[in-house]
Image 1 (cartoon, rainbow, N blue to C red):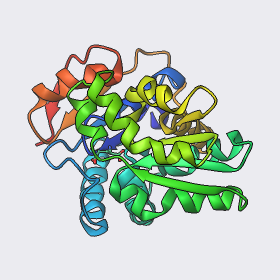
Image 2: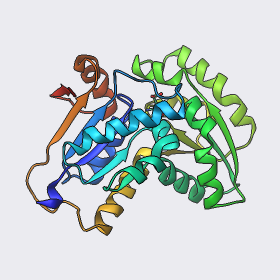
Image 3: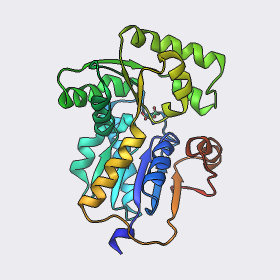
Image 4: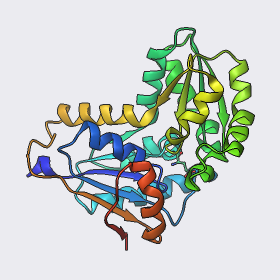
Length: 265
Ligand code: DGL
């Protein structure tokens, strides 16, 4: 059946599992095939050309699993390769930038929005552009936080050193009097308590993982391809490097046991 085809989700590695967690929560009937490009992570330090080439290969892999829609669960790939992917493939391709930017534009009261992400994401200006097109009055302040990804992957979520590094990155944004902060990297939702500790409770943290699941739901409905079957859905995980590390780290992101991860080859 057409509708029972899986949703394809890819990321540079393990971070996209925060998106899988949201898709599972909000679209519980959908089958999922996830691909984490663990052999080539990180994307956040690479060029547009390289990120685009990797992203095309990732979608080609998902297409071989007969997916009906692709979610680019990586802010870096969404920032730099989304338009190209949309032109290359027949299935709908949805990224995390527009949904996150829309939510932030709706949340801000003082029109001062911060965005944190990898160097490539911040440097691309993709969030800045989406926020401005949602509301031209918004002033955007971006900050790249390259040390956050390794901290999260090592499980250093609430240590003293994480707090100090977070303070170093965020103090500039705090001084700008923003009232909304976009967590523009799939790893960052795991650092919410540390980030909130510095920014304070009055700053709304926007998690693009939540928003992209809502957007995928809307697209499936619009195309009439939401899965209506009551059969238990499958969730398959593939990686381009050793599955063992992905399984161990991934459970923190998914907040659930990952029973089987296969190499993509
Ligand atoms: N998953 C990436 C993102 O959301 C971060 C990790 C990387 O640099 O590849 O931007």
